[in-house]
Length: 293
Image 1 (cartoon, rainbow, N blue to C red):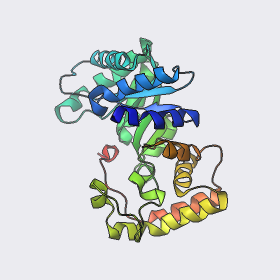
Image 2 (tube, rainbow, N blue to C red):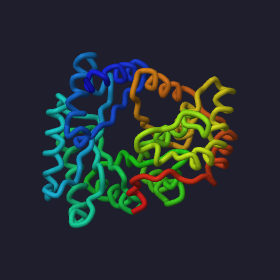
Image 3 (cartoon, rainbow, N blue to C red):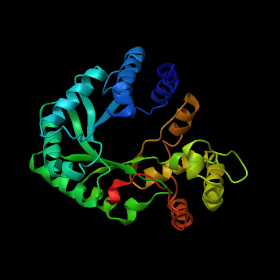
Image 4 (cartoon, rainbow, N blue to C red):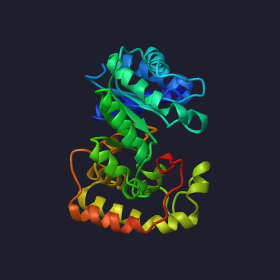
């Protein structure tokens, strides 16, 4: 049932021009990749002509050598039904004892590119120094670091102040922004007097937080009204104007089509500055933000 429920969002996304699809081996313990294979086959989509697939490997404790990385990619390719993909990423840096293997993991990414298993390689949740180190080590192997996927939004702007965004620019690395809508808080759906979030979001978005964020939501709405855009579309376009590639999650076809409305236009410099100003003093959303570790 859950698998069938994602067909509509997938088809709407691709139809609307959202052709970069990001997944990972740990999402659903491989099921996400298997579902994507079925969706691609059902729609007749070809990679990379129609869509560009990105997936990620996790530095699991038993992955002890550089060769474990291309092995992990081959397993993902089997689940995806593809001979190669557009982007392969390290999901997290190795931590604890696995931190001793971080160079090996980066060497493994280089092997993936060299063996023709992917078109580009990237990392995720890497801090500033890890990003610089990865770019240098991959560069020595003749492989560019294409991306670093981290949390980034109007309500989580740490990459701007901790040096990460600068490191990405200096090394030609695209910052891929996950949670660019702050888990829905920037959509305007959750207001002090409106809908109340449920589940874990109820703890994240209590009344006090929603009240403090409302001036930013009001600004997103005002800019959207001028441009005939929604608050979500304005928030996503802000990410684009900052040089990031936002990858919002969608649950239905309507959300996919709405996200596509963030493309094909740009906020003015003044609008970006005003959004910067209003968001600067607001409490940042919590989350697992390893780029600060």
